[in-house]
Image (cartoon, rainbow, N blue to C red; front, side, top):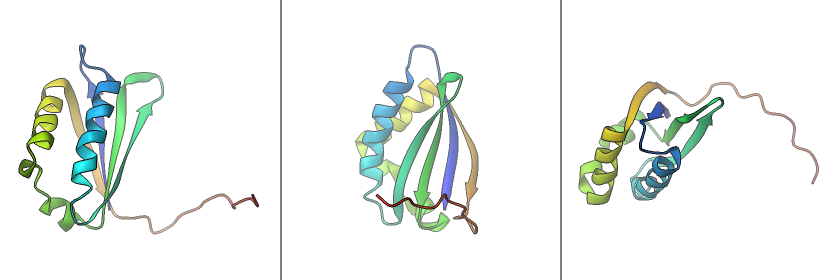
Length: 106
């Protein structure tokens, strides 16, 4: 299951600052049962916008996490609430179909 967010960084805060804090919080959150990793993608032509993707075993696992349990995660999320406009794009099941290029012989 994937949770996808668009993050627009407000003036006075940089995408690099957001990414550093995202990685720090993610290292803590990834210790939660069901967490499977996170990704950030910078939007082409909009350097202050990133796509944030969090992977979880299930919606129930993601909903069960408690960000309030860790003071550092709480601090980061509170800062991001002030310094970024964050929009949930959606919650997506793992893909039913995948088309990948063939692997070359290395």
